[in-house]
Image (tube, rainbow, N blue to C red):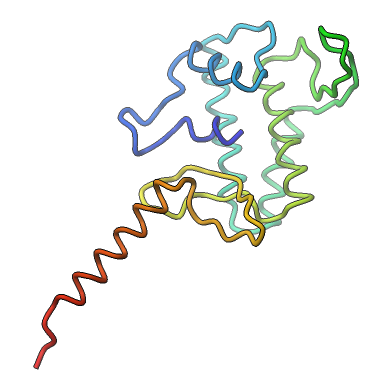
Length: 175
């Protein structure tokens, strides 16, 4: 879900990284969410809408708004959990029928994943605090203190603060 949301990145040129059905298939195969389906250009457009809806959950101002936004995603996806055997005979929980449209299957999986996260580990869905980065991430630190999506963003912010302190220290004091 985080990788889906982060397919739109203002730091990149062009910022849109979910440009084609092939891009969507690569992303979903990485998480074994594509199944035997093929993505279409309609799926790409629908997935971009879902991506924006998921991002809004991360960007909500408070817990009530977070829950309301997530509940809208889950309601629209019409989540219907069921247990079935996969191709290897292993039991799995599926949240949407295999014949459901691709975006619905992703919305069900991502929505329930976020619901479990919010229920068991509140305040873990975050947006990077390093400007201009807007990537989202899940804070897995023990005390929920992580502020940046990556070490690169954290290092950039810390280096900028260090340079600002050096510059301030090097200025002569007014007399």
